[in-house]
Image (cartoon, rainbow, N blue to C red; front, top):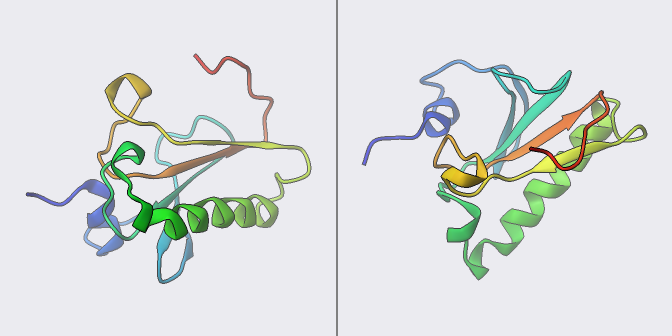
Length: 114
């Protein structure tokens, strides 16, 4: 199986604007931002989508959410509000088969998302 786009970014085969890295994940600026702040928090472990995560991934999933919250504070959107999105499958808007969390902020976000 070939590497996903995000695996290539994690392995530094493709450049990306990195805003965070630790042992479990990286966070990068989205190349097609949907808000002034649009960060992707990506686990280094390949999990194709949330629906394929297991109980063994529970701590990693929590780490992704806490990392996103920390980045929201660092990027100045925590007080005004932000949205976290995880797309799952084609109808959910998934375009890369590698679980990731979108952090969107610095503009008013409508509901439903559309």
